[in-house]
Length: 317
Ligand code: UDP
Ligand code: MG
Image 1 (cartoon, rainbow, N blue to C red):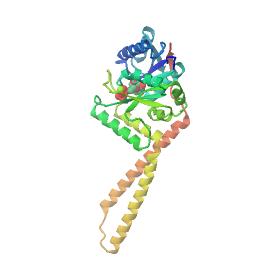
Image 2 (image 1 turned 90 degrees about the horizontal axis):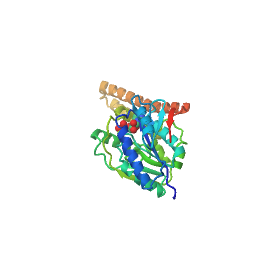
Image 3 (image 1 turned 120 degrees about the horizontal axis):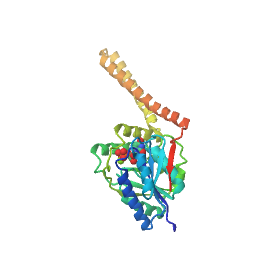
Image 4 (image 1 turned 45 degrees about the horizontal axis):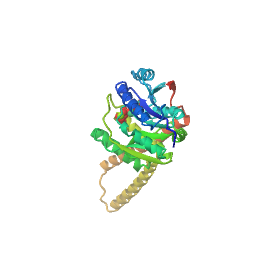
């Protein structure tokens, strides 16, 4: 490859006024360095996607665009969530770059491996995953829930890269293929491995959030996990089916046992066992309905085929 690739670093931002200046300082320094080292084209840029923040995020992005090098902006008309905001950024960048790297605004992911990602691309990879070596700086809670999440995804048969979040490089043709996935329930971590092509991983240590708070509290994390599984796997519904079979077997055994006891004339008044089984079976039926409902909900959303996001303003160079 002779020509230098034009790089777009795509950064989704939701209420990130506390970190944006520092983030841009670091990212633009890195961009400048890579341009000097002739790793990327001089017209490479950083695209900040404002995901309908209600704070100073967009004014700051505008200010960066007008007063400093490399900054570009995409203002979405409302909050559509991290995955959709990222998709919006990638779809815009796709038209104006050779490679795009997505990274969170809080720079918890080490930007020093970006040159390595670009290197892998120049060696012929279309997708380069950023993978966390360890999670020392995350709280015990975040670490264990995240790990449980990756395990569960694996059990459910969803192909994901272990300890990889949304920090990755994608070539233009990978991006083009990605935009052919039209689903509304976006779970990029599950979609990207479906693209194919040659891939590679680069490893780094994850650090603390620069400033501001995590936008992924427990409730959002749980929702994200449920979405991830139900958008990619129908195993839970099948598991319910097998669970139902096991229950029928248990019921048959109990019937046989009761008949046996009846003929031996030593039946016991079984109030508690009745109550227990009533609540147990009731609970399981409700869970089963809930899981099936989750899928029907997904179908409902997909069938409507609403647009994923709405663009209010773009600031490009
Ligand atoms: N984010 C977003 N829209 C949202 C929530 C989050 O664009 O509705 C962005 C946020 O600005 C950040 C990234 O998604 O750049 C990841 O969020 P965060 O760092 O808070 O998540 P965590 O690292 O704690 O999982
Ligand atoms: Mg973060």
